Image (cartoon, rainbow, N blue to C red; front, side, top):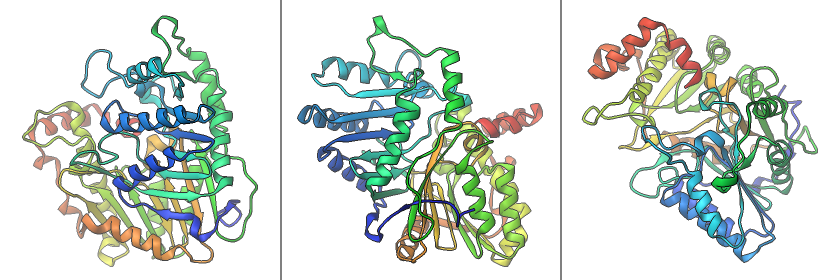
Length: 437
């Protein structure tokens, strides 16, 4: 499948690695300030905090300098219209958008995309900062922790691609499938005249998005990049490419995922890969590097059980594949760096094919969310060294797992976590939760 998969030809020097969240922020602000004709941003959210405000201010300044500049920001509709988990009242990010647009002489489009009727059923997980002929790709959204505004950061992957054809393709997909859809509307509407999408419009949008694709002139030889998009299980080109990367790999895989909870089809492919004597390195966040981890000394809430659920999923997988760990075929690396969090995603196969994506490679990503990614095929080996350097950078704060027993059991968890997880197990709700969280 991968050899036949068409892509956009790309020159070796057109791909750059940014490596840190500070570099991402600096590069993003620089490109926004120098934008000539268009800025399209797709992210889960643009937060009402210092970093989010700084990026929004930069977009407004760019628009003020050049009123003809086409600026569109697309975020998840439901996420934008609620506050952070645990907050009460009307405190969504859309209130910031509304206030800024009311005061602006030249407004920009900040659009909410309702992939599903409810947030827990699926969200806009599309990624990409498309500025003129440049694509800055990362799994990061826009807020303080993703952009390392203060002391803490959320570690992700950050790549810059100079390609007019790729930028055009990604802009075109956003315009055709999202901007032009009746279910996608402005998040800065005046309260008195606000129009929200109705259920039938959202259902219709979901059906169209399940058939979405990037359009471009394809080549099947040489170094190339293939943009991929997917929603749902049936015609999901991104999911198919993930499985193909594993099945067609001849030697080794390097996989990053923040939450280890693979769907059955992915878990089975990994197991088959190992039984054929091929190597896998998996880098996964320690439970303390999870977005929702709550230290024992802090006040606990139900959402704080999530990191422990993911950890038990990892323990189960490691126990089942302990034979491969013993043989050196499976290397599991746990990432942990102070109070920072881990958000990396992607797969490299044989050092030749590299998928960068926002997909968490879990059941939710495979079935519920709108996801995308970029597959780089390095037939000439010109990026081999840089991808290896990125992997070394990723592994800097990791500890290798030599035995599944190094992972804690339920008995070692804080009392509030044990109570919740026992209740979940008793109700047999873990099967459902792993598919929607």
